[in-house]
Length: 280
Ligand SMILES: Nc1nc2c(ncn2[C@@H]2O[C@H](COP(=O)(O)OP(=O)(O)OP(=O)(O)O)[C@@H](O)[C@H]2O)c(=O)[nH]1
Ligand SMILES: [Mg+2]
Image 1 (tube, helix red, strand yellow):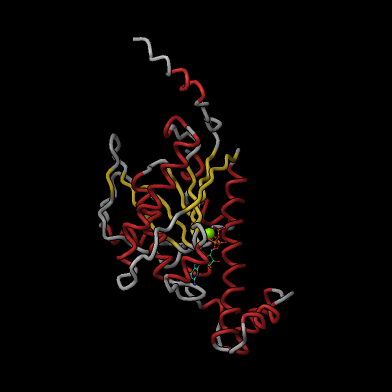
Image 2: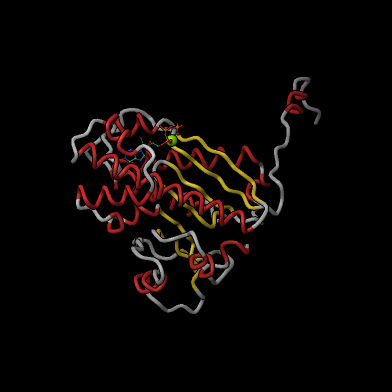
């Protein structure tokens, strides 16, 4: 049937495919979370409730979108790696970006009260998003190393900064001045000598961010959920088991489980233990 005389406008919708057989990284970032965190009384420098909420949201996104093989989050941001063979929405750029961003945002609102039972949302939060196409494994590893290095740099700075303000009674201007031009060793030293804080003993979630992996379990795995989680924790500290049963993949006997880790992603150990992340 011929379209109406108006149908030609459809021709203005230009296809926006992402290059085939390349890795896609989608990074979502809280919009104006400086203000949002103030308005909702986030603990400084790290609010564990807010970070756990982000992790839970990311885990939900990965349950919904099985082609996401890895997530990494810190502060108000999360990066998601889609396997290079993904055919999700025919690799349409806008379709993937907008659905991932809106699903993440609605989950954030949906789960908010679980983590902030006494703090009603004062206004709707939003997230911006981008997808970057990367050609090879080395660059993907460098990408995630970059985000984790950033986590470390920001967290060390923020930890000393707020120690100077909250315990050292400096103004924020004075604290900035104290830290201007200092190297990492000096920041560690200030924390240790003035505040008795050993940075390396702080919560790993704060120091390393959150790594979310979809682990594949062998079909003959007879381990229980809890045992399996412990086994997968080898080499990574502080694994959070979920209470959900492992998901049985359709059309396959493999079981998968999404785990939240706070481990090093810089270096070989993480990647060598999980070759399937970059090989799909
Ligand atoms: N107090 C507190 N603030 C946090 C926490 N996590 C994130 N934030 C705030 O969120 C900001 C995130 O940084 P950005 O994404 O660069 O800043 P933004 O205000 O969100 O700005 P845009 O992303 O450009 O919209 C931080 O600077 C903090 O102000 C937290 O755990 N505690
Ligand atoms: Mg932000």
